[in-house]
Length: 454
Ligand code: FE2
Image (cartoon, rainbow, N blue to C red; front, side, top):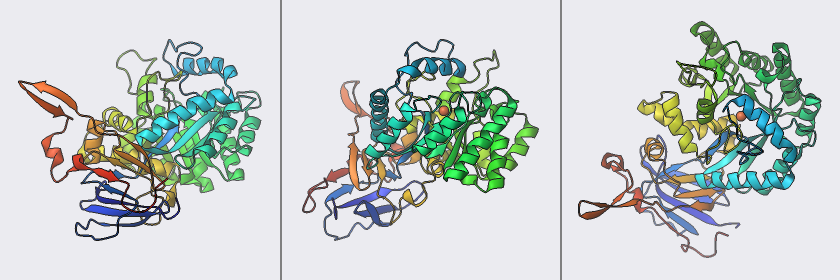
């Protein structure tokens, strides 16, 4: 593979008006420049003519539970649909978790994610299990898939740090065994005081072992659940801001205006990230309401406006908390547009950033992410004219490239319609979307130069 080259011509980057040409060598971008239709550069090993298609940095999954994924219905279905019954069902399934069981399910979902163009994944892993068997399996899997997907593992104390026997010891042991991120679940701890203490334990551990922090925080409709202020304050005082994430924070959707105003200021000063999981939050929250029924999401628009980094995650794929899902980031963006009422043109473009660049900030990918010379040549080519077009039509990536290698491809598949005596292709394109683009004509060739890309 050393020396293999790849060139992409006439690609459209999100938010950039001109088309660009990109060159890749040894798995990294060597140049990103305005498209030159008259170039006479020597052919690369792999040549992609994007023909105006959208080229984006890869999708990033900031929040999924790969240890529990694909267990929906085992040993029983979640009848009430609540978060709390989901936790109870999972604790019944947990004794049957084995290394092979986790590897089989987690790897299958990682394959789905790679096909969707998701090349960076943060997975929580329940460590309230004295065997830590799922944690060990995900550490093993992280090493095996690293050429395609960068996997981050969160030591996640599903049943509490102080409220579970030896919870604190298990959390530290998980970090010793290779977890990248320290988790917490303060709203699940038995008392408010234990919740506060659990955050201090998690942040202390992260400081000692030089790890990131990602706490499930205030995932409840209770307006009195206010642990995100504790987490943000810890992050602020210890100077850990962008290395800390509060996931869910659904209680923020129930806070009154006066407290939310105070919180906006604290969160923006602290620099912490928020992750909202629109599909699962919509499905799980509000279950104890009659009508009117709350949406169950954090204050996405308001926090973005306050300068807080917010990303969208999947959370659950076919598990005790959510029975559907394929971990499709464009479905998260689409659902986020609706659930957070982000229907303005700029807001829709922002939801695309929330499953790409903003999620990359949550994972602290830094120079390891983005379309720039010197960075890893990992990207997706989408058969779409803009992020909004990609979200609206829920397109599949035409090509997914990881470290300079094509790892997935999919032919656009229009429906064939017999319509009033003629046959037409239907791909849900509005003619106005196509202006100035020819993405239907995008092609790839692998015989441009000597040698193969394998
Ligand atoms: Fe979660």
